Image (spheres, rainbow, N blue to C red):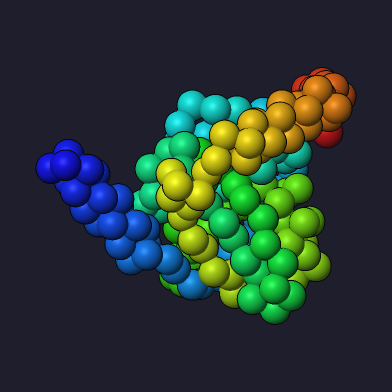
Length: 158
């Protein structure tokens, strides 16, 4: 009986902490040119995987992002640090920005809400992991054309 009460208190306090971490501010998105570059967590950025950068939330936290202009929502995983400008709350990947409608605005007001363990059911977790793994298979990294270096030609003296 005592253990059940303690677990209930722990759940209430963790939900209260998540409630305190809800934020509103400016949301932006990563450009595709960062494709293949390592993030702060060590993962490689992929524009078709639903990921995000947040200043304070721990890596691996699932977050619900809502664009206030349109009311559209999406769920992303925090795997990087940023944005580092005044009023910036979150940077989302390109596919998440397209789903929100953020690409048309560039940056806009968003509401960020971390999801608790109670909200992340097994079926939701499996859907989110499947969505991201399929994106990596369907959109492999494009081959970049190598830039040819210009030959240094010696100028003739006149």
